[in-house]
Amino acid sequence: MTAEQLDHFLREHGNGQKSVLETLARFLELPAHASQESAITYRIKRAGFPTEATLESYDWGRNPTTIPKEPFLELGTGEFIRRKENVSFVGESGLGKTHLMQGIGRKCCALGYRVRYETSASLIEALNQARAVRGLSPKVRYYCSWDLLIIDEFGFDRLERKEVPDALSLLYKVIDGRNRRSSTAVITNVNFDDWTEYLGDPPMTMALLDRVVDRTNLVKFAGESSRGDALRKYKQQAEK
Image (tube, rainbow, N blue to C red; front, side, top):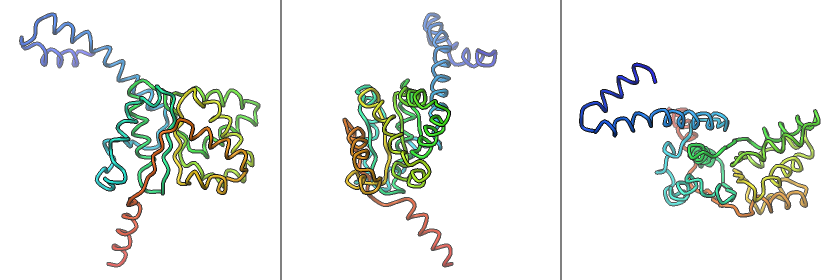
């Protein structure tokens, strides 16, 4: 604690309203609190979230009937991780799936869980690069080590599959390795019924899907897209 921090503490707690023992106990709590805050900051940094999105910053008034707050607050307790359950966010773009999952991830970091965010493209790239240097098994173990692995933009990786024909096989290694051992969150705009047609390779897609939906907390997104608002505003400005 710096001299300035000590002076601030004494001004707040040295007014005689608390006993010496109460003041001393509060003083001794400060280093532990600071250490805890540092650990949370470190876990959030390691998670690799692409934005500063939180549950508190989400616009809950946009789609209050189709995207109610309560299920996401429940996920933010991290109980699904303790139970080694999965999460699946399915729905069209622009409804806040990524925002909400990052908010849940941040809450889980604050609770002490180790969280990692990836897109399916970045995950495929990392696995493919590791395989090229004969390091695929350690890389798979790395992705299996997180308490919660978030895989965003699942199904957006058609281009990546052209470059890495066995991309689904690489993703399967990670998801299968985590199955019932830790929690995986998948964010996709492709309905589960369409995965086989969209992703190709029916046997591998079905094996992957079986593990994604196993013990999953499924949330289907519907409503008014924020991107639709932005497009309307752009058109209105262009017409002026």
